[in-house]
Image (cartoon, rainbow, N blue to C red; front, side, top):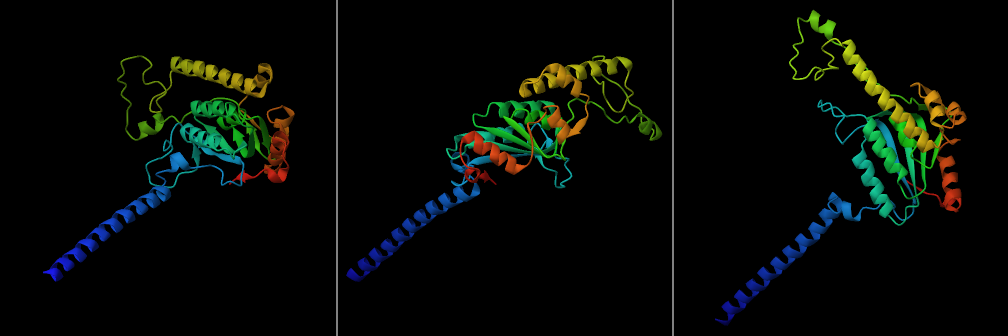
Length: 284
């Protein structure tokens, strides 16, 4: 009898030990999984690794309204893009990181969505820390608007800058459709509900509406650039013919502040933060 009791006690001991080991193992696995899967990233992620102190935010490719807006559904790898939600999330994390002393926007973009560009530009203006925009290959249209929100703009002498203007141009398909035996059937509850469709000719009245809107958008673009760059609106209006200019001309017309590269930005941060250039470390 004593032997049976002892065997039962041993079995119970091992069962309890196994349960404890299982629970502890599950807990450790959960912590590990949360940490490395990114589950805790929103609460714990920091921009700095403790050594770098300048947050780097790339503004690359097309400026889009939201993540995935440039997905064509083909499954092919899409070109780089930036959207306001992702940008604001990075800024929020960086501003909460005590090791971050400034923001560095690295721009290579020809623009994109006007509203998204304005949203990001305003977010840049509201950053509480020193901010520099570096235009490398191109900073045009909406991407240039974003750059104007920074405290200083640096650009390569070989860069393409400006393109202040708006476009609604599109490819009309009416002749192609006619050759293919296709005919546009307009069914709309209002006169201008389907205006701007590439499958029908643009009427004079429809063109007038589009050009009216373009004028309003263009004037707002000029106004925001003038305010952000602290330039007379008349001066920006003269430059706002839709063309882009090389870095040297952009500097001459005060669209940028310096010609240079990332090392120029490092020197700017060092002076602004009153530290040595060696102490300026970009988070890359």
